[in-house]
Length: 266
Length: 334
Image 1 (cartoon, one colour):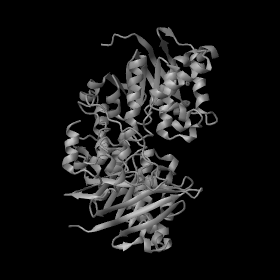
Image 2 (cartoon, helix red, strand yellow; image 1 turned 90 degrees about the vertical axis):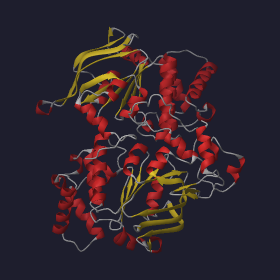
Image 3 (cartoon, chains in turn yellow, purple; image 1 turned 120 degrees about the vertical axis):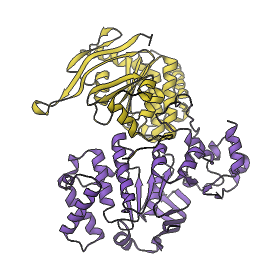
Image 4 (tube, helix red, strand yellow; image 1 turned 180 degrees about the horizontal axis):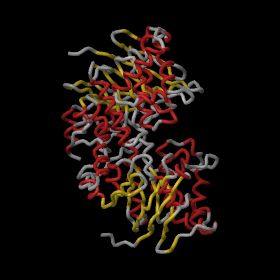
């Protein structure tokens, strides 16, 4: 089905919290394989383990069992050097753009840090050129912004700045954890279009985490449905949305208000 | 024809910042709400939806200031009353409000039952604890909320449960008008459905006579509301029945907004989402001309200069210089 090479894959990923009788698995024996330039959506209700799974992928939380492979090599994050190299390859956008920036740094400094993470040695002029490109990519004007602090910008602008940052770092995997849940429907389509453009131009793999099935259907190639830490259904977006197999997926689909169908409230 | 529960005429309200600048958040809103109807209000962030909700409640505390207009609840102009009378006789009894972060509206240090006693006593001082407890029990059973919630602290409840509890508490005194400000935007789809079910039941049982539902989720609004009003930069640009607005919006802004709807249905991937370029105007200055002109594809020089009047065609109102046929022709050419 997918001829691209596998970028990130894992087997039996498990993460438990608590001890004794309070012990429960937030992520329970999850197997996955993400291909190059694929958009994967992870959909589930609150508390189904989506964010924990994302944090494990990012290496912010350690898995209790299972193995993750990056480009066919076993992932190891033991030393600072290994972690730094890994975070140059995998990056994330979070739900709350207001909490994603260092409030004491101007936009220019935030961008310069990204260039540093990428490991480029550029002259001041070249660096400015790159930053300007990043801003044009997300339809912002660099000249207006570079001297501002993050709190001077609106929510939509900040979320776009976040994408500009991803453009600068140019990772091979991007994890987007509910990037559009804090912004309104109108700016939402702009953000989605930018993610699609990133995938097209930079061959980026995007893991899109959301609880909105409509959104997942619009952006992604394949969808994973998560429930209580387990992946209960996976397949291409068309298959999962138009021909759901599992009860839970059907229930989720029934809960979303649609336009051409009666919304059953009983 | 059923009676009007809420009539708003030419409402102007503004915020005053610390630098003594005025931000004209609501300018010239005229809308009426009939018994048994749900009115949905949709629009971008920052267009004045929540300010409108606060204004309708008579909640004028700095920085929000009242400028002009009338708000009639059950035939009485609430702007002629002092706030204390309004609070004891109208809020909660005639008009109730569910704030945006309703989940955080519960008192974390009190059990829900105790909290309800406090709330009810403000509006009806003559009720005993026992009567209030009985009322709360009955209402919770009616809307299928477990009565153990009354003995729980808010931290013990899930997000959806807290939201439903807040709705049950705010409608305990059978208000005529309920204003719900984004009651489901922090919830996932399953809890969202439970909340909507409950609100529908409250309407069907006649506990709440009419409702104003504010959200930016248009597919949701389509199923909840009878009529939809689209708000832009402090003005209502179009009002009509929900089917008309979602499928045949007239105003260019409403039309563009409908292009950003995402629902999981076949054929969604084929159509391209439309985004509206530019940003809404700054409301600090008094604006003249059409407020959407800067972002409108069809705007001409006249749009920028001429003050837009509200036009009524059949069941709907819109605020644009062009006639319905002219606009429909323009959309057909896209």
